[in-house]
Structure formats: structure tokens, C-alpha cells
Amino acid sequence: MFTEKMLAHRTKNMGSSAIREILKVLSRPGIVSLAGGMPAPEAFPMEKMDVLCTRVLEKHGTAALQYGTTEGFVPLKEALAEYLEENSIVTKPEHINITTGSQGVLDALGKVLISPDDAVAVEAPTYLGALQAFNPYGPRYVQMETDEDGLIPDSMEKVIKEHRPKLVYLVPTFQNPTGRTIPLERRKRIADIAKSTDTLVIEDDPYGQLRYRGQPVTPIAAMAPDHVVYCGSFSKVFAPGLRVGFYVAPDLVEEWLIRAKQGVDLHTSSFSQALAAEFLSGGFFKEHLPKIVELYRPKQEAMLEAMEQYFPDGFTWSKPEGGMFIWAEGPEGVDTMRIYDEAINNNVAFVPGKYFYTEEGAGASTMRLNFTMADEETIKAAVGRLAEAIKKVV
Image (cartoon, rainbow, N blue to C red; front, side):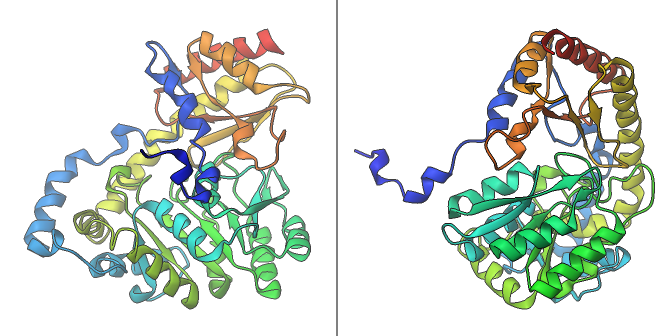
């Protein structure tokens, strides 16, 4: 009989997602979720899917349904080369690789780079999905300090000198969970540090196109292409269920990431890739992106306005120019796990911030709020009920 004794040693590092467990309460009637990180269903280009599917089958025929190369569907790689160049990353199609969501490349990076007890440098707080991808390979996480402008470069440099991490993982634009964006001057400094210390930086950029105010900031990859793996995704701007991500990496890293993918899934869905290629090259993306922005902007504004109106004194929060999240922090001594329990009683869910830290006890007074899944009036009412829960606990 199969028993746990038969499991690989690495499974001890593969805990279930705490956030997934928290989100189980969303099945309860009446709960308003400010917790998840999913795109709104109305953000999907449903009115274009028939056209896209027809074009894909007419243009590519059975090739869109056949096995493909591990590196990815060539028309998509060509379309992505133009897209990336518009965003300051100049590369050739053959150096762009397609993955099954950006999560696919994070797992592959862990597989080819991380040995047990290797140091991995992460922001504090950081994206939980990256930790889940890296955890099976047994890393030793080292937290880098952040402020309202994201990663503090001096902290990154100190961590590199003291711990020599195998990689530095960053979400520089509209970070999950904080919504913060690292400004240009800091990015230049981060790029310089990566080059001077010969350190590999993972630049995860799934939210960069969701900008509601301000001007785009040049990716770090554009300033240090030989030291950065740039990861992107269609999940937030097209459809997450298609599971199409991509990356650009230094040559040796790229070679090993391709080998890792061959052993996992051979290649990402040909049909999904063909749809993404047509979405980009056919002009659908440029037409659809403003609709997503106009859908999310008032939702974010509604949440910020409601927090200003209802949240008690002593709480602060991020005011991102885009993305999907707002990060709030209470006074020292506040426990957002207690607030969470009371909020659920008020039919509102959020994610306590402690789950985004790698050090035990960190982030106890923080919370992540998402605004993409509810309408403006529901958001305002939910924030009001959340504020009531906060005042009852604090």
C-alpha cells in the first residue's frame, strides 16, 4: 500500500497554499472577496474569441492542434519580439521562449538553479506563487528591505555581498502583493548592482500593462539583459485559462530552462499560443487593453476613496498607479489574522499580509486587498464593513 514514506524528500517543502485555504470561505453565500488576484471575467475579450478562433484555424490549420517545439510557436515569438521592443526590450524571436503561464518558468528556474540550502533573495513582502515554485528545491530565503518605492537597492547589494544568492526575485511593476512600482533611478541602480556583482535577477512582470495613471517605467531587463530573466504573461491582459507566458533570458540560463520544460510538458498548448499570436499581431491587444484599463481604474479609485473615508487612524496603504492590489498596514501590534476572522463575520474576505513574507512573524499588521472582481458600489460597501471589523479588533 502506498504510504507517505514513499514520497520524495522534497515534498516536505511543498505545503498547500495558505491563500487557497483562506479563499475556501468565498463559497459562503454573501461573502464579498477583496482577497483573490483573478482578472474580472468581463475583462476577457469574449466578443472577439469567435473571430480569433476562426482566424487561427484558417491561418494555421492543423499546426495549431499539433505538437510544437519546446521553445514556442514561431508566429507568437515574432509578435512578442515587436511587442517587447515597444516596451524597451530589444531581442530576436529565437530568444523568446513560451511557457505554460509565468508559473512555468518560475518552477523551471527553481529546478535548474536552486540546490538545497542555496540562498534566494526576495523582496519583503514578495509574490507567494514564486515561493511555491521555488520551495520544492529547498532554498534558504533572504529578505531584502522595501519601502513605499519598492526594493531598496542598498539592501539588495548588502544581501548579495553577505549571502551570494543564486538569484534575486523581483516584481518591479505594480508588485503582488503591494502594488508598488520601483522608480527608474532605483532600477538603474539595481541593474548596475546585478552587473557589478554578476548576479542573476528574475524580473517578473505580469501586471505592467495595467497602468491607470502615470508613465511606464523602463524594465530592468532593458538595462542589464545579460543578468536578467524577464518573465511576462497573457493572463492579465487576455485570458488566464489559456496559460500562456513567456521569458527572455541570458543564453546559458535559456538553454537549461528549455531542457527543464522538455521534461515537464514538451511545449505549451499550440492552440493557446496561436490565439495569443493572433491577439497580438492582429491588433486585438491594442484595441482591448484600454477597455481593461477603463474597467479597473474606477474600481481601484473606489477602493482608495472608501479606505480614505472608512479606515481608522493609524492605518496606511499604497496608492498604486496600476495593477490589481492595494497593500494596507496597521499600527504595530495589530494582528490582521484577528481582523480577518472578524471581517469574515462581516462577509468580507482579504488576505492577511504575513503570508507574503519568508521570515516567521513578519507582516503581522499588513493585508492585501484586491479590487478587480467586484463593482464600485460593492467595493465601497465591502471596505466599509472591513473598516468596522478593524475598529472592533484594534
